Length: 497
Image 1: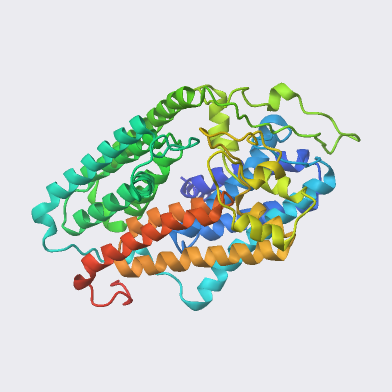
Image 2: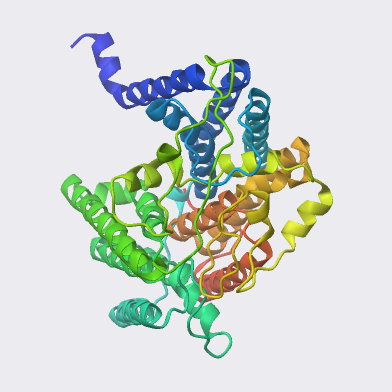
C-alpha cells in the first residue's frame, strides 16, 4: 500500500463526510432562492460551528447544542434541496413570502446564531477551559456495593411502575392535557422522573459501578430499558435517544472503558440500541394514532410561494408534496423517515415565521419570555406562525415552536441573537463544568448537556415553565454531590490526570 493510499484509508471517514457535505452544499447553492454569497457564508459558519463542538470537545452540552442548531438550519435546508429541489415546510412559517430578500434575511439570522454560539464557546475558553471528562476519577460511597442490587431493583421497578401508571392515567404525555390531577406536587414529580429523573439516577449508578470495578454492560442494557419505557410512556419519539446516547457516548469516549470491553460487546450494545429505538418509534406511533385520532388541531404549513434561482416569478409548491396528513396523527409510514431524519429538527421555519412578522420589538420578546401556557388556550406564537394549532382545546396541547434563534429575533435585532446565543452557550458550558466538578460523573454531565441543549434548541414554548424542571434537576445534582462529597478532597479541585 502506497503512502498516498495509506493516508486516504486512514482518513476515509473524514473524506466521506467531506464529500457528503460538498454534495449537500452544492445542492443548496444550486437551489437557494437568495444570494449565493449569503448562502456560502451561512454554510461556512454552520460548518465552523459544528467543528467547534466536535474538535477539542469543550463540553457535552456544547457538542449537542451545535449539532441541534446545525441540524435545524443547514442540514434541514440543504438536505431538502438535495431531495426535492425546494424546501418543503415541515412547520408553519407565518407570512414568509419565499422571496430572495426574505430568504437572505432568514440566513442572516441563522448566521448570527452560528456566530453567537461560537462566541459563547470562545468567551468561556478565555477564562478556564473544561478538563476532559476522560480524566475524571470515579468515586463510590463505601456502602454502595452492599446495597447495589437493591438500588438497581428499586430504580428499575419505580421506572416501570411510573411508566405503566402514566400510560393508564395520562399524567404526562406529549400533546395532551393531563387526564389525572394528583395532589401537589405528584404530577410534576412523575413527569420529571419520566423526563429525566430516572435517567439521572441510572447514570449515577452506572458511574458508581464503574468506580467499583463492576462490569457495566448489564447496567447499560438496563439504561436502554429505562429509555424505552419512558419514551413509550410519554409518547415522545425523541426521549429514547436523548436518554440513551449521552451515557453511551460518555463511556465509549473514555479510554479506560474502551479498553475494558471487546468490539463485539460494544457492537451488540449498539445493535440493541438500534432495535429498541425502532421499536420505540413503532410503539409511540401506534399510541399517537390512538391518542390523537380525535384531535381537531392540524398543522398548516402553507407556503405562499417558492422562488428558485432559475425562475423569474414565484411558483407555487404542489400542495400534495408539502401538506402533512389531514389528521394530527403519526402512523408508522415511509414519510415518517424523512420527518424524523430531516424535518423534525427545530429552527429554520421558526426564523421564517418570526422574520416575516411585522410587530417585532423588545416588548414582544419580553411578552413571549413571560408567557404562561394554560389548558384550553393557545400560545401567541401559533398566531405569529399561522399554525393550525390555534383552536383552543381542553384535551390536546399541540403547538409549534420558534427555536432559540427565532425566539431571540422577536426583538428584531441580530445583535441580540448573537448576544443571546453567546449567553446561552456560555451558561451551558459553565453549568456543565460546575456539575462535573461537583460529581466527577461524565455520564451525568453528558445527560445534563443533552437535556439543556435540547431545551435551548427548542426554546420558545413558554420558557418560564421550564424553570421547575431544571430546579428539580439542580436539587438532585446537589443531593448527589452531598452523598459523594466526603469522598472528594474539594468539589472545585482539579481532577486527577
